[in-house]
Image (cartoon, rainbow, N blue to C red; front, side):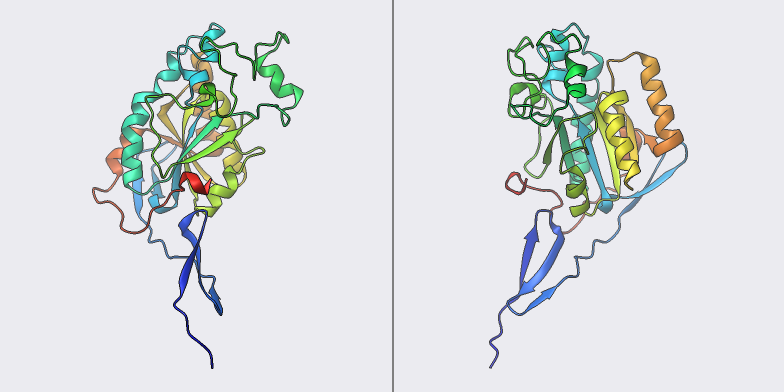
Amino acid sequence: MTTSHPTSTARTAAGARNAWTLSPDAADLRRPAIPPRPVTVAAAPQRLTLDLTRTAVVVVDMQNDFCHPEGWLAGIGVDVTAARGPIPVLAAALPALRAQGVPVLWLNWGNRPDRANLPPGVLHVYDPAGAGVGIGSPSNPAGTPVLEAGSWSAGTVDELVAEPGDIHVDKYRMSGFVDTPLDSILRNLRIDTVLFAGVNADQCVLSTLMDAANIGYDVVLLEDAVATTSPQFCFDATIYTVRQCFGFTTTTSDLLTALPPDRPAGPPTGLHDEDR
């Protein structure tokens, strides 16, 4: 005689977005149905309709070494005023996106203390003269290891507070897809469209966006939520390149205006720290 048992749901890392239903004698491989929640947004090069249930926002490098007056960039004489520009924009936009069930991913440059996975070309970018003031050195005014995972340098600026359901990914290159789990996390969340924010628009943001587009994601640059310490023509070229070659640009103000007033029903959409 077969004894029946109640079924249970086995949660993968992405929780209810990508799960099987299991019992001792059966596995149901059908994923949960996620009803579409389309919104239409003013964008360029043309008006854009996206599905909120298949959308995530990736916030790139809004961390102390790049954006804080005592961080590494400021310590080598770079004016970080522009890099701080996205802070109030994101502080207003991220809660609204979370409320719509859009996962928030924090993609910060955070190296291994031994820098074992960094080739010479990457080290050169941050210390071109070989003076020992680049990645891993205590050469910022705060005296913490430059861009090292777990340090103040790699931490997100205080004005932007991550929520428990947000996802944190360390990166080690200009692109957040190289040598990281970013792609597998997005696919496990069943994401098609990625909104990009952060700094520097023409460097790490653009590199990550380009790789996302090249491996099949729909990409949208949030123009008012990105910035760069590079000259203005670099920002202008980034906007042109995204629209011309890779995807779309819009603003958080246009996106928030398009969001429906109701919150989605159903299970949470993000990862918790223990799932990272």
